[in-house]
Image (cartoon, rainbow, N blue to C red; front, side, top):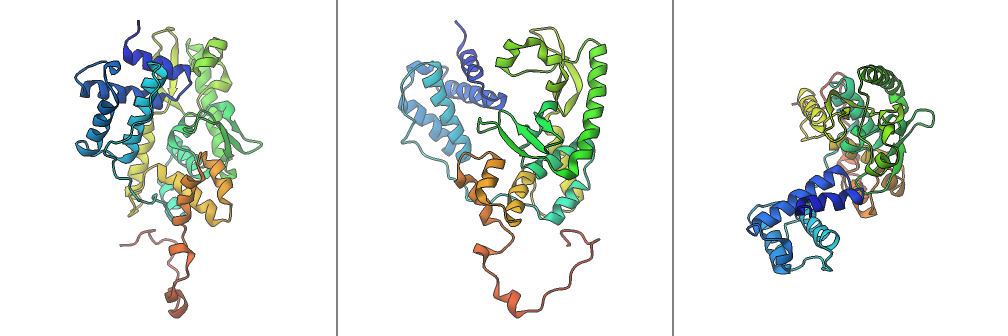
Length: 334
């Protein structure tokens, strides 16, 4: 009989959830069990679940999104792993839902940021801004997911669970072509050395186990190092780790002198906001971003560069317009 956490992993992989979801759900289940003195969840009831969720908000001061994720993990545990019919927990102290708007960079700030990136980091950032990709979605792209002729990117197994198609910017195509050529040269060297394998989705790995060495399934952004997969003994290459991109973008933000607390995710926020500024309708942007709810996408209507509710300030009518800054000026002068 598999241990509890192994049962959770098996149930998640059977349903083809993302590796990040697996990692998060297993962590929440483990914390839940430890919080209740290593008692088995079958011995615990609704009040015990509420006590844990309240502890997260009151004692640990976690965000509403983290608390909601913990609740979803516990519901998955009881319904899908233990086979118990339970309602979603209520009656616990809820963490406060922040009202913060997303950080959006101006077009000049985007230029300043991208100008301080190079190599794979530059291309990842371009795809995030140009196609509205999440960082994980960009790093999990495979060669077959990028269509240079149709200028499309196929995003597989995203956060929403539904594959989607987004735009491949025209300006990035030469850089992508060059990247694919260098990737193929590395893949061919790996094959000659007895490697060349990559991880495959669970279902396809069982159906076509040798496809993991084929060119179309290779990562667009392979890692610099290889590793030996213990179960198969094959030498694999994973994709770049997110921290490589996050650290480089954080450094570029500092070098560019940007006053905003911008992370890699600000590139996706900027894509959505600038697309709205350019006149694209909210439904189209919802599809490109892969949001399940239109309400999630609507947040970008509040950060458009048009003032509160699109109102033109009386100051812009009454006072003379300031002179334009020089192109060499910093995007955020002191």
